[in-house]
Image (cartoon, rainbow, N blue to C red; front, side, top):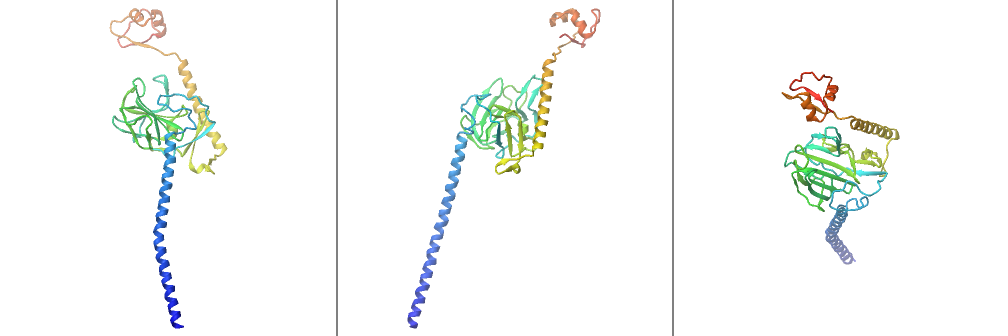
Length: 321
C-alpha cells in the first residue's frame, strides 16, 4: 500500500511539472500572437489614414485637379467643424507683416496673412494632406503650393523661392514643402499664407496665433454666412460642441459689428474721390502745369485757393484733380 501511494504521488508531481512546462511553452506564443495583433491593428489604422490622405475631404469637394481654383460649384454646409488639432506652424517666424483684409494702399482685398521670412527659410505643411497645386505665377503668388487637407481646409503658401513638393504628393503636418522667397508680385521676402474652406477665405489669424506659434482652439466651427466660432475640446459633450447661447450670440454680434464697420470703411474709401497732387519744379508756371496735368488754370486756382498772378515756389504742392 505504501509503495502504491508513493508511486501515485510521483506520477502526480511529474504531471504537474509537465503541465507547467507546457504553459511555459505556450506563454511566449500568446505574447507573439498579441504582438502580431497589435501590428495588424497598426497596419489597418495606417491604411485608413492613407485613404483619407489619398482623397482628402472627398465628401466635401466635388472635384480634384491640379489647377488653381478660387471657387467650387457646391453648396456650403450651414455649419462644419474643422479639426485643427493635427497642426504645425507653416514657419518659425512670429512676425506678421501684413494682415488679412482690405489694403488701403493697394485699393484691394488681401486674402491671406503675410509672415516675415527670409529667402531660404523652411516652409512646412500646416496639416497633413495632399498637394493639389505646385506651380509658378509671375504676376501673383510666384512659386506657390496649395494643399487640401482631410479636415476640409485648403492652405496656400505663396512667394516661395522654391517648391519642394509636386502635385498629388501626400505630405504630413510639419513636412517641408518649400523655401521662403520673394517671387511673384512681392515687395520683400515673406510667406503669403491662406486658409480656405470650399473656396471661402478664412482669416488665418482666426485659426493661428503666429506670435504664440499655436492654434487658437481645437476646432473652428464654420458657418455658411462666413462667420465662425473657435471651440476647445472641453466644449465637446458626446462628440458635439455646446456653448452658452448668450456667449455665442455676443461673439457673433461682436464679429458682425466689426465686419460691418470694415465694410462701411471700404465703401467710404471707394466713394471718396482720390486726390492727385503736383510738386512744383523750378521754372514751372500755372499754364505749364495745367497743360502737363490735363486741366485748366482756373481749376488749379480754385482747388488750391490761389490767383492767376500768384507766384509759385519750387516744392510747392498743388492739387489738380
